[in-house]
Image (cartoon, rainbow, N blue to C red):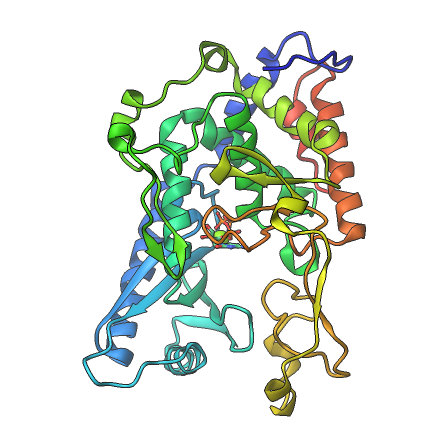
Length: 385
Ligand code: CTP
Ligand code: MG
């Protein structure tokens, strides 16, 4: 890799690595939590079958990709198999029917039906302590979960680094797409990008068994192909010897250093499916797209405010504002290409103000890691405010 002169680079990463490993150990979900999640999954599955007949409930996000922290929310997705000739259930109808059924069950609390969100979902808390989002027929989410899981299985360092980045982002309050910062999913993509650059991870979407042409496996119009046979990956790709020597501490430092001072926010797009960087021009991600609210939606009565958090840019952006000003649909300040949905900028909730905050946090983190002393990871992850 290109070793540029870096006056802040620590001379040893041993302390950071030891700290990081201890830290990760504590944040692992306990087996008992897994048991509660499985029980909830089974219960939701029974309810979906009761309401819709044939139904399958699959976990995705951190409950499906091996990147969960202790006390993480559970994301699940319901898939229906409507009988020949029967009406398809629309996302809004799905949310209404399963939401109403869940209301009748005293095991569930704080049930919220987000019908007008970009991706309609039901949010709830189970009495056993688990918070859960229930989505509908979101195949791409299942596939990107599997892609992330595959990357985790390649190298044990991936999980440790992701866990620390997630905790850091949560404690520093830059892990909320509804208020202009990034989702955990976005941070995982940022980590994979850096690890690809370091030679720790390959680009699974370009590797083909037998070295043939990359096939097109259609999923909602996008190519969901990736090399998933991780036990046989070594026939097609090897990590560089240098990358194998890099400790978790060094890779963590590299992550923060890269986004603090090397990545060019004004021009670049993080793209794990191309194994590197793209330019905003090449994707035509240069101008924010503002769109007037759709005509037919303006006629609909506005749902109660409680349905959508006020700043819910990620999920409620299809909802027209009460005064019908044009809604900003996509921002391209921090560009992170979704690995499958190539026209989706996962960094789109980021505005000028939150970009300033996030970049400031990258710089703060790089600086902290470059200082000596005990408890670096604790200092890194100090709660903001
Ligand atoms: N997702 C997506 N597009 C986004 C955000 C999320 O497709 N812009 C999907 C992905 O499948 C992702 C899942 O939603 O894996 C959950 O996202 P998120 O909650 O951000 O990630 P988690 O790994 O579940 O993190 P956390 O533990 O913080 O909930
Ligand atoms: Mg989640």
